[in-house]
Image 1 (tube, rainbow, N blue to C red):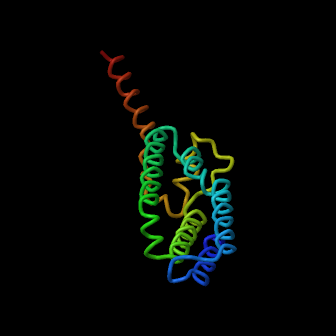
Image 2 (image 1 turned 180 degrees about the vertical axis):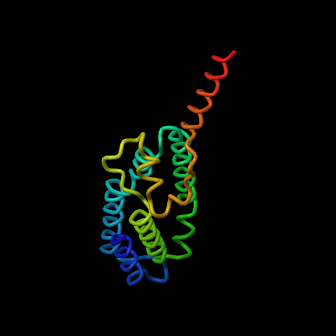
Image 3 (image 1 turned 90 degrees about the vertical axis):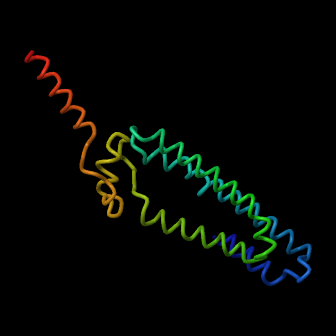
Length: 162
């Protein structure tokens, strides 16, 4: 977020009406963009793959990963297609726009992403999602495994009687 803000300030102050900046400022902006990409690759970038692998229970992991990958590709496409148009229209403001989204993502991660350290994947629903202050309202009390066990017991009982 700092990198985006610094780039935005440099462009806001030094960008001429013709859309050009001095060579020194241009080099600084390019270096800061490279530094941002490098920092993103070591921090936020892998979270699109890490969070689904640690938070989805085994029963929904495949569907969760497919949704995560699809959403990742969709938003990458949207950003790639709209970046140049937004840059031309917003100029330096685009960097503040993306800095704001980084702030939103940080607040989301801080308050809405549960801690999964030390929790086995099998216990994720019971120990994490059903206990979280926000997500527990979206969890049902019905346990499909218990329903399946009950049905098997009833079927076994009915076949043993006949």
